[in-house]
Image (cartoon, rainbow, N blue to C red; front, side, top):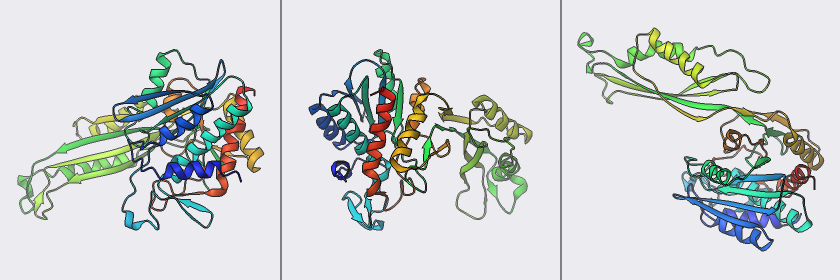
Length: 375
């Protein structure tokens, strides 16, 4: 195995780039790419570092995209080894960010370096952010908006999120569900539990509506998306004392939905549940992502071909899981798909990545770019 991907990954993992901090990861990558003739543009918005690097000219312009930030480690004493000292055990490389997603970052950089050295048609590009694990406000979304305002046209994008599930190469994300969160606070009257007639229990007001909310029938999914789901994430009420009737309760819930649903239809259905129980307290909504799917065109086919020729596996297309920065490409009409290593330990204690997948991952990105640029 050529050690390049492994060595670069280890260098990235030693940098404690907890979101929104980049900790020099993008400087390291930019320095490598600049030597090979890449045009480097640093886009810093607020505390967030973004890197845009391109090589070649003309179309098509195909972009590899990722993030250099990682989630916090959690209790460091729970880790088997230091989360920012990459450690090899039994064919795995352990460190925070190993699979999410510095392995893909390293593999993408090496793929781009090889293409720049060997020659290619069109333009190949890399977009990195340090704000994927955070708010996402000043990361890929803002960087893309800036680049598009400058007249840039991206023909396709591959995001290196860890998508494999059981075996490296088994899953491509060709879309993602939408996500929205609702928050409602229901007011009652606080009082003594021995005198309930003098109080109005806010939890008791909520309970019947909550039961109906959980039982809502969203209908079946479709060929691209599973059925809509609603999950209660937080319920807060009471003073902590066992003899006080709570005078208010707050409820937070998250809804994941496919393209067959609309934000307005979902919100109307939820609001009606509360109205049926005479609860008129306004719901505060936050829509963090809209659903998208890349069902046709050359992008998914190029990834499927590259994965099969490298691994012998025909990957399954999926839209399950959480959101990613792919949604920002989709929102701008850019065909986008995701592929990366096994995701079993992302955000977990002792996060790790298979060392054996690193070089194949880089070759898959390289092969897919060759197909998409006609190189």
